[in-house]
Image (tube, rainbow, N blue to C red; front, side, top):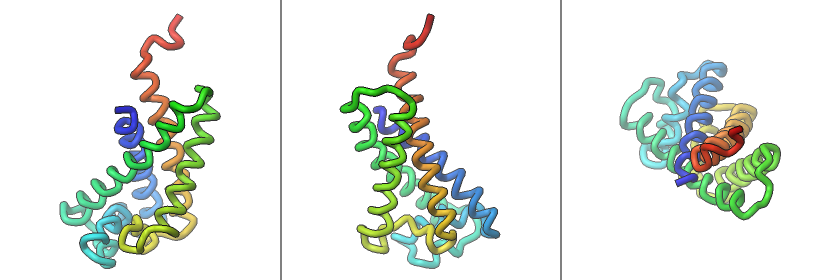
Length: 154
């Protein structure tokens, strides 16, 4: 259950980053999310500037599931570790996001990439993976707090 919470928060962080960065780069705020639907709708999916179920909903759902996918090993790594320090959590989140980038852009077939390269600069893609790291860390902290609501209470 922790991975669902952590992945959901990471998905929200990255989707917000994608919208913000897309807008800053003169794109529609929906284009980066729409681009993620390229696995089904082809490379032109990122050219769609409006929100619609065909591209935006599918792109978001695809991205959301991938965030939960990356939250699974991240959460397992946290459970296996001894430190509950926020810095350790953030470090592990950053390493998980780095592995996600390598897998997403260097190991999987092009059709299975996030598709953001069609609409965002490399810098913005890097910032999105940084948002993934922050989202994973924040999600883990929320997850821990909900599992141990009295932890730290006086």
